[in-house]
Length: 420
Image (cartoon, rainbow, N blue to C red; front, side):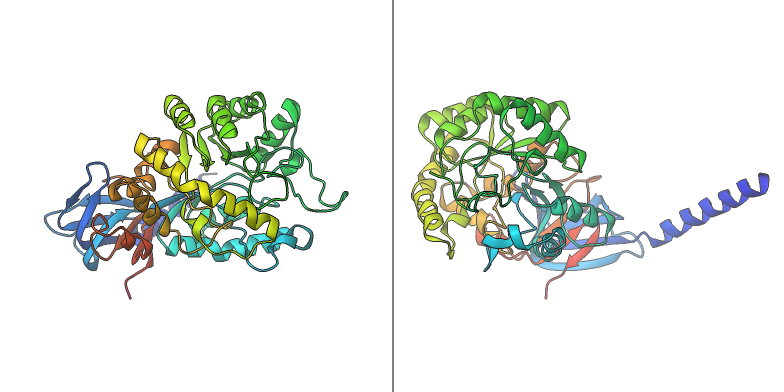
């Protein structure tokens, strides 16, 4: 027994030495870094990274033996966070029929592609708000294990909604893809509880419900309320009881108001807002995730879906201007998957074009996202936080379009992209 214990001690010491030897110190040297809390630039922007943490800012001299990365003229920013994605899907040719053609593996492998794209465009954390076959959970685990390159993920599993609603598989003949609570289709308290608990059982660390109809589904008006406020309260209470956050897809005014009053943490899209709805959001402290720029992208949709898309597009700009002007709490989200992947930085530009200041736009994807999700280890460049850092070439407060072209990406202390 003593011999065995000695070998365990030797092995432990050996592993410790190996880990220390493998740890590298990296110094990022840029023109400036943005303090997203104060809105001020710190010049120069020198960040010392040790392992996966930020060790120091603007030290008198870099640590001996550190690798120095020169980023002249660039601005360092916290790793960005996209709080509304669908990494395991897209709207490329044939997407309508995947529900009856694809396996879990197909969705998972597509997610590998889009997870890397998201990371290389500067998004080091994402919230994936609804997938199929738990492919989003598998992707999240693979990224955590280091098997796949991608952002840190929060993943919902299946979105939860009503029979025939936006979260159901609509448009098929009876008997095809008839889903139940395990796949997120749930009516009434008991079924909703089962649906949410089942997603969490299989790894979901957020919950998404569909309060209203939507665009990329074959039910009626895209804004009509689908879950009652009472049903949503059940979903909120169960999610919060399990210590998680809950998001509600909601386009129409009545559904937005009901979801906010039911206590959801965030409203996804919030497309049709009246002055009264804005007041409710403010009173309840409900976050909105606008997914704004994707409304103005070109899509090849079936006529019925295209008509719904155009109906929403005609209303979303007025709604977002109301919300931004009123100071509704905003968190960054793009709907990548239902919209295009790889161009998520356009969301910053869309916010500014709709009346938001550039600094506030950047905050939506940094400190705002961190606050809403209750994550204190990221969202700022600060000593002790995770070394999730990106850089753009120039001053993004003077030119928000720089956020569309991130030049440098570090996640967890590892560099994934350098300037060409």
